[in-house]
Amino acid sequence: MMNSKMKMCLVLGGVLVLSAAALQAQRRGPDGPPFGGPMELMGFEGMRGAKVVKGAPFSATATSETTETLQDGSVIHRTSQVSMYRDSQGRSRHEATFTGFGPLTASGTPKKMVMISDPVAGVHIMLDDEQKVAHKSAIRAHTGNSANADSASNPHGREQDRMQKEEAAGLLKKESLGTQVINGVMAEGTRMTHIIPAGQIGNEKALQIVSERWYSSDLQIVLKSTRTDPRFGTTTYTVTNVQRTEPSASLFAVPTGYSIQSGGRGPGGPGGHAPIGAPPSVD
Image (cartoon, rainbow, N blue to C red; front, side, top):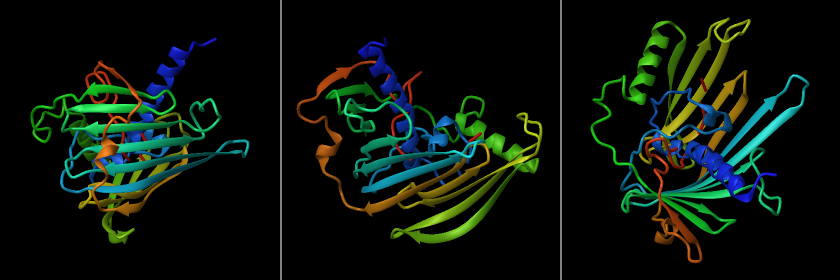
């Protein structure tokens, strides 16, 4: 039987990956690649770099829903909800709850994990509410300008190169959807249509994946997105309850009564996972 320590490691590892997915709404711009990794299957976009957004405080609720119909006609429905907070100094907190996948708590309720990114103190903190433990790790220092970095060593550059090649080959189409106000915030819409040619992944016919994203350049987060992928179903992501006020400073600190475990490379560090934040995409 799996011991409690190993179970905890699996839970924490899984939550790190899922949490990183939520943070992307906060970190990816309107031109970010529409197709990423496994996190997108959960309805979130993967985090893009270690960008710190200052002077744009807010709190909001992000909800992701994925519906997939199996060959036998049965339906799988997964939901994820993240409460997001960011202060004027760029510190962020994400409280994530996942339903439809992953282990449950001892009481049978969905797991809830909290991630805090504090660029002021230079630390990432993951709170385990069930065990009352705060896992703290240092934020990796980023050097150099990624915009000028060689694409061979820059993941974002490689993705942009891939997108340009796919556009040239007619496998990727990008359309502007104009602007609209979503929950009181102005957003710019973009539609990406990605074609997977017949035979590329064993598919008999060409597959078409459509992703729509509405991005706020003011708050620098994705407010709404939808992805329809014949392989994985339809995922919708929506940010609601946007409050553009300064969150309480206590949200970015370890609560009283928690023990602290430090060390390791942590989220965003070499070999580690990125911390929490936003919506959808897939390869």
